[in-house]
Length: 626
Image 1: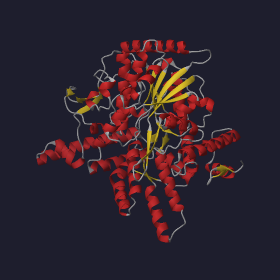
Image 2: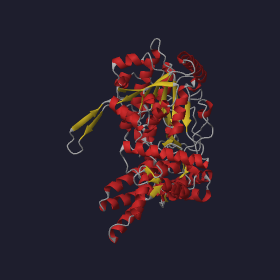
Image 3: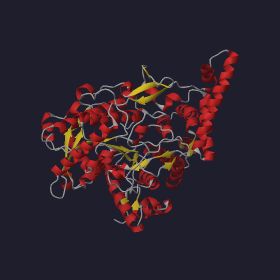
Image 4: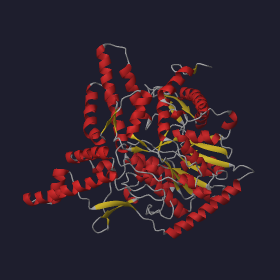
């Protein structure tokens, strides 16, 4: 979000009352432009037009072409060559269509679309440009950074900064890590966590059994985070909802917050990759607008100690880039569109955040993590079973089914057959996936609280050593003993998955069919070749983080080990039990780290399993040497 940033919503930022849970159409952010005249087209833009899935797989020839390109890449390892061949084949198809069109007296576009699934696009999408010049943006950034520095100086007391932070999304995976690290950070003296009351219902009758207050939920959370009374005393829990204006915070609470808060960390979001547009928008954009309006009110309050607003986005706001580096200082509509509405709406939220900075002088920092996984040293994830954990758990349970010796021959054969169906991952071997452990992400978030030079910047919390689908497959084999077969994503999406789903449904395995379909929808885009390469540097430049970023292979190994031993591939779901296990696991991993003098993720898989068996009763999860 520097002087090179070139896009933002054209309209003025709406007030909280105007936004609420309203869903804005894409035209607020995006315009459709003619490739021929470069004029903006006054056409409706439907959300689905902005996704990758809208522009592929509508013709058998298109599916076969993508499959061929994937195999060519596998054999040559040369993406530039593959892209060149793709362009040549497309042009050849258009030329052949032109000749056939003359014979059958049909226009070329109709023939090429009918025979080869080829369409010549006469338009492209781009984000609306804001009216601010590079010089104006530079002056704004300089002014906001200077004011943030002055505010930090004002709140300092002795040798600590005396930070008081409002956190949304505290019950989530990243939010819990923020709380844990903040508890151990002497500069954070108070953290106010926004939590909704939770209604407990009887599963069968739906009868309300209990309503847990924010305070009750918060205290339960602190216990699961292993925080003693002294560290827990810096946390306070208040009722609120991010989809409400001003988060629905009571007047009494808000009057107090206006005079005490130094920062707002907006971490709450929907991370469901398969949610429809309106659901994703309400959580990710409307929620962001409410957060920005709240922070703006805090900043404008006379005598407020407010320093800055931290917006937690995703590095995948850049969508499916084509060869170009996904830069930190700008958001450009991706040439190859977005994988899902999560990415799209997070990009829209980023533009709204930028707009508040430029139009309202709100001091903002945008932090954009890649795909967040468990903690780097032990793999602890506080019970998370989403995203990358999901396929690992499916593979692990499938392997257990194959290894299961009970039952008759028919039952064992059937279980093994079902398990092998589940051990298919839609991934091109060369596809690079950017995994980042949650502790590195939160280290960056807390650093941003104290670095006024990061105000006005967009920071990728990502890694520079990505892991490929092929390496993921190999690690799963080494750590879990599971033979996972990589399937061409295009073939899997269009042929294998529909056949498997129908077959499993016929065998009354709807749950497994739904799980595989969900995994295919989530990872089908992220495991294709040509994934975006995220620029990194601002994490070191502005946040002063270590430039030795986490080792992705080691971190993924720890994810597999944690899911296998601690969570039993997602079968241990009680959060209190997971907390108990993770504390034992953490202590054991720290012992191994001290003994080997290196990261536990670097220990040979068999040597690691032997060390665990010698010291841990895995079945009951208690130390053998206690």
